[in-house]
Length: 355
Image (cartoon, rainbow, N blue to C red; front, side, top):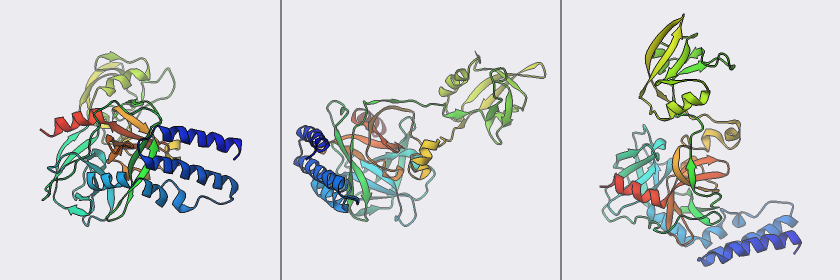
């Protein structure tokens, strides 16, 4: 065993000492052995030794059984064949929470829990702040809701378990580690738009260079060459001034715009449109819209973990090593980050939406 191997084994052993489930010790040793083999082999790891391999699945069978009975597979096609995302069972009466934006506009919803398929699904309510939708099914037998954590928030460095892939009848697990302190995820931009493009350069930064078709600015009568003076009575100096005004607005709200046109001052009311969250170059390299959630920001508080999920793998429970639900996966944010709503907020959401 060389020095690097000793360091890796020491780290895994320290992590294993914090675990209450014996499978974690098995996993740590398995990963160490696999890593040692990899360092001396020219090929990749054998399939059964990978993080989504059969050895790992066997070690986490108790967690898989929890996901099997307390998470839902949600389909949006007519034949219930194409998985769109997961859901979290939150009541015996058939209430299920999932990610709202991924089912928006879908007319064919069906749900699979364990091996049972439910084709009559009601969308009861949507919480736009958290991007959560409450579904309801009618089940002949009481469902098994997740056991929500009542303790403190999970800390950075702890292992977590989520839904991975699924067959028609069997859930599978995916493992990750909490990679950052629980925190707010703010929007880097406002989530609404006026529908204008401004000229570049400090001197002309509020001069309209383009007007988007069918957006609020065009409908309100803003034209190319207009100079925006203020929004909601706030005189605009820096670009951040307009962003701060728009951050307080929702799609469909109107904002009072004051502008100059041919030395005349005009006041217009502009209806705001929702901003389509764009993909950066890093996002595209991380799989783009095929892998990342369309809504992945503006959450009041999230658990940030590194479980390698995709946008169709969110919506389900996030478990700790005791099998307790510590949150609900709400967004695949980047190649190395998945966000989950913490259990504390999840309890509040459930209490508010199920009265």
